[in-house]
Amino acid sequence: DLIPRPFFETRYNGRMDWSINSKNSAYVSYSSQGNNSLNDQSDGTGDLTNGNFTTNQLLVANFTLNTVISPTTVNTFTAGYQYWNNLIASNISAPLVTFPSASFGTNTNVPQQSFQRKWQFRDDISKTIGKHTLKAGVDYIWNPVEGGFFEFSSTLEIDFAANPSVILNDPKDYPQKFATPGAVVSMAQANGNPYFLVATKQLGLYLQDDWKISPRLTV
Image (cartoon, rainbow, N blue to C red; front, side, top):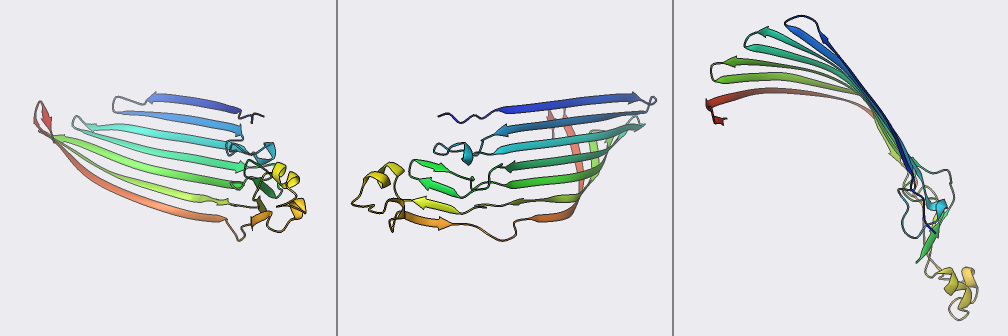
């Protein structure tokens, strides 16, 4: 049987520009992207119990102010916000049973989640002096919320050495069928706390010189 893998996505984008005066202009932009899908973690041997659902949500908002300080000097200030959330999970929590050619039960890759809230403030200034264009800037990023989890092998995994058709029809090697010692070759389950939540800050500075040596060469 085929495993369905539908994918649905919704996007919204908007931008508003404002010419404040002859030396100042600004714009505000907003983007939203959300999608959901089914069974992207499924392999070629599992049934629907081995599937999953995935959801993603991304929001980005931005404000930019451009200022002409002088005929040779321009400044750009940007403030931005971003939210991101990714969840891969299952509606089923049951032991995973595997055979060489088939499997059923909760996928080992679920559940897992990553999420982030980010603020960014950046200022760039550019000044032209003769054949030189000097650029400098500062970039500050604050992530007040950044975290997630990955519960790998969240349920018991039971691995059989042979397919059910062999176990049920081979009285020599499997006299007690599924209860035959050695029919199960391995069992595993992970434990511990997989969650993390941190807050981070980043600061970047730069200084740049674009030197136009000739009309055809800039270094």
